[in-house]
Amino acid sequence: MDQDMATTLDIARGNPNAATLPGTQGLRPAPVAESVAEPEKPTLIGLTREDMAAALSGIGVPQKQLRMRVAQLWHWLYVRGVSDFAAMTNIAKDLRGLLAEHFLIARPQIISEQVSVDGTRKWLFQFPPRGAGRPVEVETVYIPEEGRGTLCVSSQVGCTLTCTFCHTGTQKLVRNLTSEEILSQILMARDRLGDFPDAETPQGAAVPSEGRLVSNIVMMGMGEPLYNFENVKTALLIASDGDGLSLSKRRITLSTSGVVPEIARTGDEIGCMLAISLHAVRDDLRDILVPINKKWNIKALLDACRAYPGLSNAKRITFEYVMLKGVNDSDADARELVRLLRGIPAKINLIPFNPWPGSEYECSDWERIEEFADIVNRAGYASPIRTPRGRDIFAACGQLKSASERMRKKDRDAAAQVAAG
Ligand code: SF4
Image (tube, rainbow, N blue to C red):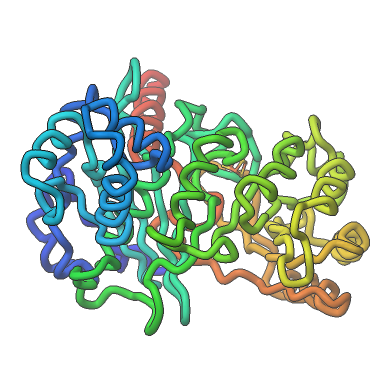
């Protein structure tokens, strides 16, 4: 990859060249971070219909109007994608004023937008602290492909788990994201891609040639989504609501490292597709690569998968398997993988390891990956080798970590070097 070809739009710092960066022409100006300035106002984004009705009732909207008002707001927020009450033209001016006085619907601040040579986009968003502490930052990645556009959404700032192949795992958990913050990543991506009615797609942006620009959601960004179950559930149910963003549940995939007790609930209460970060076929190795395995081992995890509500050949579980040179990539590993998954309607995603600064692993050689894939394919599993995307902007699987955290680490390393003389 040619690192020099990737472009960064440093929005928060007002990059004067922004208009000339490839794929960024025609972008709407970054919204002002109203929520940063006025954190005391509650937001209407990310509320269930019932909670939104209760919030409206709390500011005096008459009981008999609540259903209609919620439907109007829902349409403006999730179909039209507006972020200003003033744009809601079928709502009386007085009520718009009252709503603006009490609630926020503003977008988060965009700290940066990076565009990879392969068209992958990565955004760094900033949200208010939600309590004590500093504003928090999360990364969201858009991967355009033929026929679909996938958004990789974060569920936590940092992560409590310490999967040894994953860059996010080196960043401590700061806090869970709220349902608003999870949904806002989708709304912001659609804003920046011009994926709402009346909006224009930036010239030169890599997007699918037909269909929706954000057609698929994967909860595979920063964090373990099942350690933030309620907020993730609320956000995904809003994302799949047919009167709003209207994303099919078959196009929403939640990826877990293996929080076994929450797996059945994911199927029952969210009903989305499931992916498992498996990465090893023996407990002794998985204990190291995905340490949550010490709590719920491979057997417990696969038992929960077999019982996943709605599991069928049409609704398969995806098993993610990162290819680490000399660690988990032997023929014996491939055969054991096939044996373990027998009886589970499954897809296997082989992920060439994406290195990051300080990582202790190397990616398996391409030939090895192909031989591994052959064994798995011969056993009847469709096992695509996932082409690495966005490596030059650290947007690939397992590479996410907030840029400010990266900069803080750089500063710490530089200070340590100076101290060491
Ligand atoms: S792979 Fe997922 S669960 Fe594991 S450390 Fe990374 S973000 Fe956390």
